[in-house]
Image 1 (cartoon, one colour):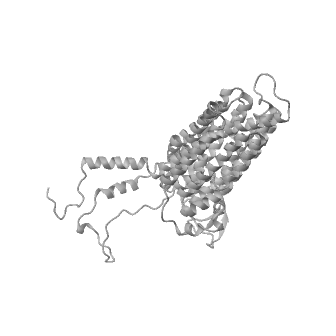
Image 2: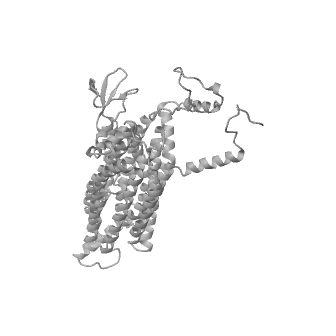
Image 3: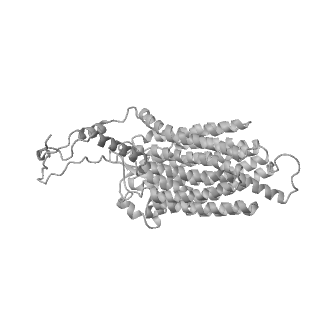
Length: 540
């Protein structure tokens, strides 16, 4: 058919063109920015996981050497390291290591958050992977030297994590992925990222245990070093650089000493203006942070506790602990990747009482049905301005309507966690430890759900600081739980009752559940006001 002046300049697509377009769209989805970030999380967690199981075993061997350096040599059959004194000493030294790691992680969050504002996600990620590679190289040295000197090298060189560590790279990836999805999908994508990290950790646990048994205990650390090099190259070439335009408020806060402490300000009470004009102060973020703190404080030691308990009571080695941690992390990763988003989606529908309206989708499809191609089809503006080519106005950055269910999910996750942890204290056989390790992952999801709640209660330009805040709370809880429960486990090991530590963990989870009931979302249709607004306020 001959074309005239009324024919569209772009003709109908041929089947071949349509097929190519579909393939290109599918490829863009699979290799899109969000999935590249998820892959980076998997790769980094895989690398970190390789050394986690061998570290427990390495410290047991080094503590065993220290014990026999001032005691008579071992004689007779059995494991020379299977003594209560060695188990208690190992627990103490591992707790010191965990405390130094978590202590470094707290400062790492402030520094890495500053790096993100200065350099963007890509180069902030590269800085973290480079320094983690340096840290694992010192661990190779510690394994080679052994004894008390080797333990000190492990513990002291964790200070490298102040500038580049695991908490930092997770903050980078959470910040980057939150900018790639719509607001209503943030909670789900936080869960998917955490699931990718847990899957990487699972395979890292498995490979680390096997490498330690098949070759030697130093090989997992050497392998991790080369994987950090690969992760650095991947981040430099494939991670998204972030949006080129930043809000003016974020640009102003990117520099200066205030940028370091911005995450702390997020947790402070904020004021909201009701429809009536009255201004109230909401403390929901404080109680949310405190509840998550207690939840992590209760469950953060669980993976190490399972390994320590299984090693001391059932003589688990690196292979058995590797299988235990592989199953725990793999189930958690599968849960967060596939089940958690569906639970959040279905739970919001149940919690809100009705499915999310699809009127916007219908409007979008309706607007695409007819594209004006003739001059007379363009409507003239009332002001007499030259009509412009019609474009679909972007929807407002509508906030997540399911935040209420997210908070509900955080609360009851702690209940499930406390029940499973309490039951683990009654383990009398090795398979029961495996069962506890496989059931604990189904109580996960509280951290990504809390991130979703936190980001939706903040201004858009403060979302990176909100993620930093909730990660800071988790790191602080990890720091304290390593020290306290490590000491508790060591004390209970001295009296040959290490299982009592599980009951202490469960008790703190219940307290966290109760505290979260004091966390309330802002009233409906309220609007957050700036600190400089002068209004009459009351406590809420």
